[in-house]
Structure formats: structure tokens, C-alpha cells
Image 1 (cartoon, rainbow, N blue to C red):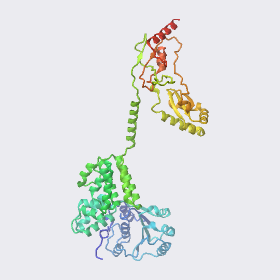
Image 2 (image 1 turned 180 degrees about the horizontal axis):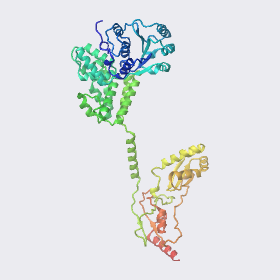
Image 3 (image 1 turned 90 degrees about the vertical axis):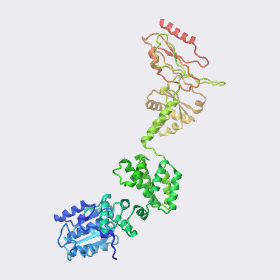
Image 4 (image 1 turned 45 degrees about the vertical axis):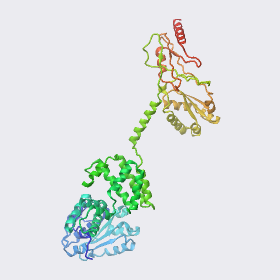
Length: 589
């Protein structure tokens, strides 16, 4: 066969021609120059990065007629035989097909004999990780202490599968994937030498498809050269590889941004009906998302050609970086599962619909929760219709207001509900449930046997410092009453107030069987002024909770008392005057 593929035709023959592995080439040259050649080497790394190539160059450098030398001549008999894989002193063994103990035993017998026409007998074992456990064990002693004329070069793409006992006996060299610039430069040089043309966009597609492997890039290029006689174009390469048109990929991302699920399903149907590979569609979408994310962060870092700049400029603001990360994770997970799914199209549709769902990161969720909390607080505020403070001597003392709340009777119905004075600012209306959940959780840790009764209970706020706990059965009531003081202390500690707790059956709570005590503050007996004040305040009949103020501080400051409206009559001006007169007489006495 006269035709030689590009990967073999342009295989490097010296260390200087090797691309992307300068760190390894330089180390091996130094070892040869200083006569510090080891007896065993392990070359590991991705496929197509030059492991076997450097192994052959190293063998030629050691066995060249002019060597050992860092620059093998390539013209002597030894160099030519090694290049053609015909040397009896340099043997390449494929471990994938020679995995048994018998194959290693044969090597052990042959290493006893010296090289025929070379200085070293060199064994290059490719894909060494595929040897059996018995074969590795048979190789151990020979690999550790081979004869002086024997050198082992082991190559593998999966170093983690090689036993540690083998690794410890070798000098290890890690080969890396080639960069875009390195592959691009090499292909352009090959195009000049082999007399063909390729445009930049087509070259970029080949490099991206190769994944950093020079051999894969040359194989794709070889396929393109064989299929066309003219210039290799991007459109031709896309059709050759099976890549989808850019319009389909960009449209899919637009539909995801708009949450247009109908168009997403239509795109999937179009891809399937036109014969495109759904796996390739997912790969192209993943690559597009990655490039767009990098372009949105820093356009100079991305590998976007001039033709695609307008498209990426338009789409770079479709999502924040956190959303790009989520989309990349989802499409990568879809690709992983689609490889083993019997219906990859269904799986792709599900993941694309999931990608289109609205998404908020943690910071956005916290901001929205705070906004909702503010709205609830504003909606819970009750507007006071009128506030009236009567005082004979201190007309400007209005810093703190004592509020009196009256819950009026409905027409035609008698009400037994006592009117209670509470402070709205100290109410737990907005976070009572959260407070109660914390209390139940902590109580459950210490008293698990009684915890269920407390979980089934209903808590009700009678006023700012009084709570009522109602349960449905007498047994449950007895259970929680055993821990009444513990519950009270928990509520006091969690709320930061001195809490009073009452416990009743549910029927009693519903029928008003529990009489709620009025909250009154008696004046302190000290040398304060004798004047007494009564503060009365009427609210709308629709008010359900009192508007708060600091009762104790106000009463102590003015030495006054709080007057509660009677249920069946309103306080008029005469009542207030009588109260004031009574206070004055008492002071004089």
C-alpha cells in the first residue's frame, strides 16, 4: 500500500520535533547527556499525545550507531530499523493481546541474552495496564533488577490501573493534552508540506473535535483530504463529522432563555427527523454553552472566531454565570445518561425542559424572601382611626401611647370575649409559627415521649405575654401539663419575654371556657407626683388586634392607671372626670 496516513507520514523523528511535551523531551535528553539512563520508565497520559513516539525516539537515541546521543541520525541501520519497527533489539509489545503470565515469562527468559547489534535491548510495552495480575507479579523482579543491557519503557492511558508495586520501580512521566495553538501550528505546517488548503474555521472545528489529541486531529484531517479535492471548508467539515448547524444550537439556547417549551420540543423533533445524532446535538449544545459562558466573562480568553463574534455578542447576556454553570451541569449529566439509555431522545427532551425552568441562585432567593417578609409586615399593620390622651398637667407627654382595644359585639349575638389591652409591636403574629416550631423541636430532644402531644397541640396568642396551648384529649393535656414549667421556660428563652402559658382542652378553647385575665398595671407607691391620668383610646370596630405601645413605661412615668372600657357601655367624659377627681382627692388625703 503506497499511501501513508498523515499520523505516520509526519510522525516526529527527533526530540525537537515532538509537540507539546518539551518537559519530557528535555529530561530524557539530559539523562542521555549525563549518562543517567534508568532501567525502567512509565509514560502515561491521554491517547495521541506522543507516548509511543517518544519511546521510539528514546530507543533510537540510545541505540544509534553514533550514540547514545540526544540527536539520533536516523540514517544508520539501527535508527532505520527502529523507525520501521523491525529491530530485534527494540521490541514493541501490545499488552492488550499479550496479557498472560506466559508472555511475561518469555520476556524474562530473553532478557538474559544481550543485544545483537545495539547497546541496549529495549522493551516497549504499550497499554501495560491491561496485563493480568499474574503477569504483573511475574514482571516485578525482572523490572526491579534487570540486566544492565535491558531497558523497559511502559506506556499506558490509565496509570491508576497499574499496581503500585510496578509504579514504584519506574521513573514516571505524565504526558499532557496539546493546546489549540500547538495543534493549529502543526496542522498548518503539514498543510504546507502536503500541499492542501484548509480555512481557519474548519481548522478550529477539527481541533475542537480532537480534544487535544494530535493523532485524532490528523485522522480527521486525513479523512477530509481524502473526501475532497478542493479547499477544506468549515461547512464540509461539519457535515463530515456530523455536527449540527449553528443556527439550531443557538436557537435552542434562545428558547431555553425564554422558557419556550413548545419550540424546544419542535427542535428535538427536527434534529431526530433530519437524521442528526442526538448525542452529537447534546455535545454541540454543551460546547456552545461553555464557549458562551467564557465569552461573557472575558471575550479575549474564549476561542471564538470572527464569524461567530456577532452571535456570541448577542447571546452573552442571556444568563448570569450561575445559570451557565447550572445549564452545563444539566447537559453534561444528560450526555452521561444518554449513552446508556435505550431512548436517548426522550432523555434529552426531559433535560432540555428542565434547563428551561426558571432558576434563582441563593442570593436571589434570599432577596425575594426578604421582600415577601416586608410585604407581609406592611399588610399586617392596622391603621389607627383616632388617639386621644387626656391630661390636666402634661399635655405634651405623648412619646409612648397606651392603647385600649375593644372588640365589639356583632349585632344579634352576645359576646363573652373580654377586651384586652396588648401592644401590637410586641405581638408574634408574623413569626409565631416559626417560634412554636423551634420550641417543639427543642422539647422533642429532651422529652421524646411527650413530644407527640405537643406536636398535635394548637397554640394561640392571647396577648403579648400570654399563650394558650389547646389539645384534643385529656391524656394529652395531662402529658403536657407535666412539663408546663419546661415549656414556659422554653417560650421565655426563645421570645426574650416573661411568658405565661395556659393549657386547656380544644373544646374549652373553642367555647370560650378559658377566661383571659385583663392586663393592668398598678401605680408604684413612691414620691412621684400625685396626679393620676387615664388614657382612653377608641378603635374601629373591625380592629382585631391592638396597636402597641409601652404600657409599663408610660404608667410609671405619669403615675397613672389604665382604664378598660366596660363591655356594655362606653366611657364618657363624666367617667374620666370622676376618675381624675378621685385621684386628686386621694392625693390630698
